[in-house]
Amino acid sequence: MLQTVTIKNFRLFKEFDIANLARVNLIVGKNNVGKSSLLEALYLLVNPDAPALPKLLEARGEFSQQNYDITHLFWGHRLQNESSILIQAEDTSLKITFPNNQLSLFPEDEPNQQKRLVLKYQGIEGPGQSRYELTLDRRAWVRYESQTQTTNYINTKGSNYESLAKLWDTITLTPKEDDVINMLQILEPTAERISFQSRQTHNSGILIKCRGQDKPFPLGSMGDGMYRILAMAIALANSENGYLFIDEIDTGLHYRTITDLWNLVFKTAERLNVQVFATTHSSDCLLSFTEALNLPKNEGLGKLFRLERRQEKIVAVEYGSEDLTTAMREDIEVR
Image 1 (cartoon, helix red, strand yellow):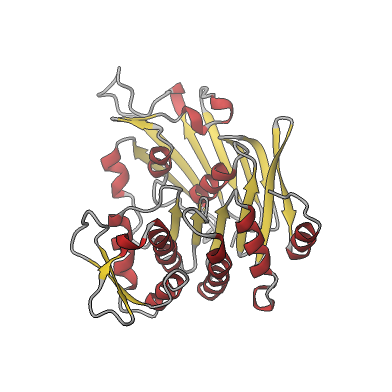
Image 2 (image 1 turned 30 degrees about the horizontal axis):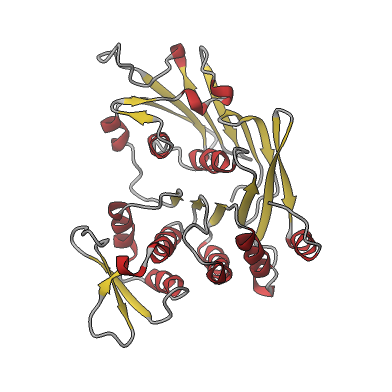
């Protein structure tokens, strides 16, 4: 589990440190202060065996046809010769270097010239350093995808049908199905089972069976909140002994459901040994997080970190359960 992380030259972070991370971490702050950037940096750090960069670049729209625009990965949107990004934890470090001042990974004016991406990773498991040199081609990246996925990232757009179906296949007919159903019951108390059809349909391709109903019906008919809960539940169940990253965790959810969601996140993350990082802008989500954190069974499992700008530097301000309780009682703004 990550405790302290240092980030240099990555997106909004020229130099950034965050310490005393917990089992479940909620990241808040104003717009354009680095919440999503922090999730991305941590995701890259714990995902060295699979090239996670394409996923992050495409989610941000930094991809067009055959070009990945990497300029914006670097602080100040400046890419210079031998520019490097460093993301480092206690016994783990990831250094990403793009040599030769290439503004695009696959330049249109040099379509046949092969470029190289170099990732240097110092892992937790051993003293040696692993070096990855990957051809900057989407087909080559796919070959390096990990077969055992214990790190999952859910952005604000959610997860597509194919990725969810793949994750569901790994837990079907196991006790982890119950974790998913328990989370779905936050929105639909009568939910009993779900099933993925052989292919996606216009109405999601996922069926749900509810108590008292003779036949299952499409999950898509129950609204976006149900699909969002399902995506988070399946990702959490598939992150055992790993990490889960959720950007804007409360997207599409009514505020009255969020406390129950946090309770299950705390419970499942502790049981499956998952470290969770989530972001929000919502005061209701923050209040629900505080309420769940103050329950005796969740004591010490979570922390809130507010990112704020201090001139050119972004800092993380830590709030434990007592700090949050005081802030909520005194109506102190911590978002």
